[in-house]
Image (cartoon, rainbow, N blue to C red; front, top):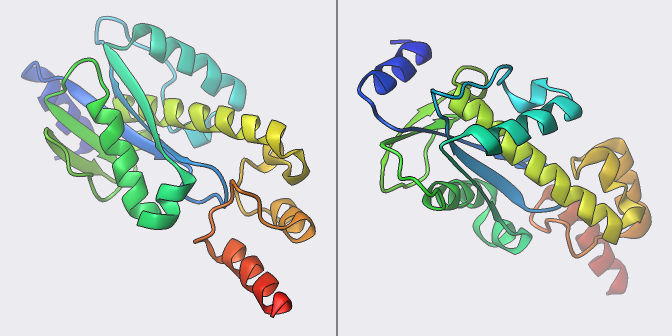
Length: 207
């Protein structure tokens, strides 16, 4: 059965389908975000797809429509401290769980982008590439991405020397250059290799 058929069979039985996705697993800084969305079939939204394939302007436009037209939506996050304590996989699963639990409407089933699901109180199914196959997951992808981008812009205001407004925390050449120049900030993930390496170098020099 294809993903499209799966989504159709759920709606055919009047189940409330919730799409779930995350944003921010790869960056070296900032929280990881997740979103959960139950779309309203009576208020369709055109143009939903994987947030990474949309321009920033288009994402923000669609995010507004999703918040306005969806039956229910929620955005949640796991902090930098939680990421470093739990590891990014478990932190991502926890953020997804929080998003689903924060919905104002309880879904019948959660369709989760990727190859694994968080532990939820509702039925769930993982769909690889679901953020570009299932509208509800696409919507969650857009909300998670826009929420995280907004958070990184706020971090840029606090730590402009790292240029978070340009790379959103991802390990680009510019970000790594600024890390070497300014050192590790309180919003960097110390469990990530490039950040940990800089901290280790600093410790060695101080010995």
